[in-house]
Length: 329
View 1 (cartoon, rainbow, N blue to C red):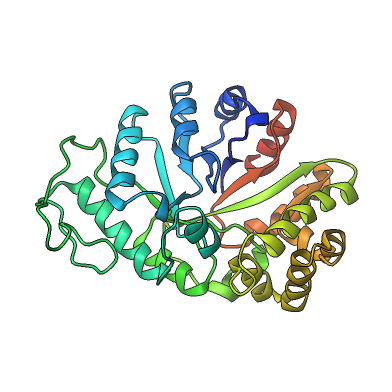
View 2: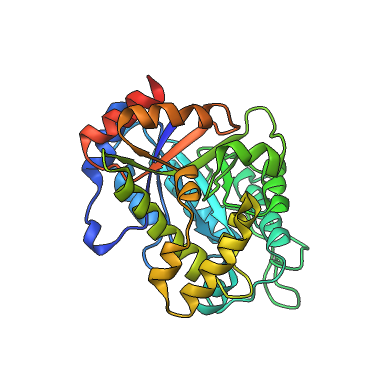
């Protein structure tokens, strides 16, 4: 199992995480990942950290499809991959209608078909085999009826096969990721239920699962931290009629709880929404507690299809070292 560090969104109060990233690199972490929603972008922090490191891989978890056209993402990825010596892991995802329509002002039709088309175009750009064209309905190139002509990327990529990861939660989206990408970035992972929900994965396919980690003797407080995050995602990170985070929690066996959490959260009863989250759900998707407890629970992840553990939470050297020893030791 490989080990990565997920920094999440860059926030003003988080300042510069260069020292954290350099510590993770020195300790043998394989990768560091950044995110975007409707605040910081995912690529700029990676460029900053990439300029200050030498070995650690740099991942987006995830770059939103609607934020950029496929060729814009392909150009950004090619440039960053070149400047960092071939260290980019490009995670992309469709996000959800609340963000796509509310923030980007873009429609949200057929996310699976759009993702497939998006990835195909990026690979055409990087391969430079011929001027890029696309007859698909979502990203036609050149634009029909206009003055545009097919173009080829001016710069030769360092790697024409930049690894693509897909952030996916639905079974069909995960199956597509296993078909067209090098990896899958699940947000909430109940390790013992992955095979039951999604089946088998191809040899060499990277299941890079995000997991909240808290090394502490106060298990209650740590679980409450996980529950706070879950109440936001289940309750408020999606429209009432279409919340992919609530859907995945339902598929994990907590459909009734997810429905109640969302209803309470949207009604403004956030403490009750928090209280409605089962402890076993929070515990199942995280690794919290003293080192001995985490070591014991890590076996569930080792026995699952997960091949990379992307830890969220630890930032100080002592915690990063403890996690390294537990996962890689």
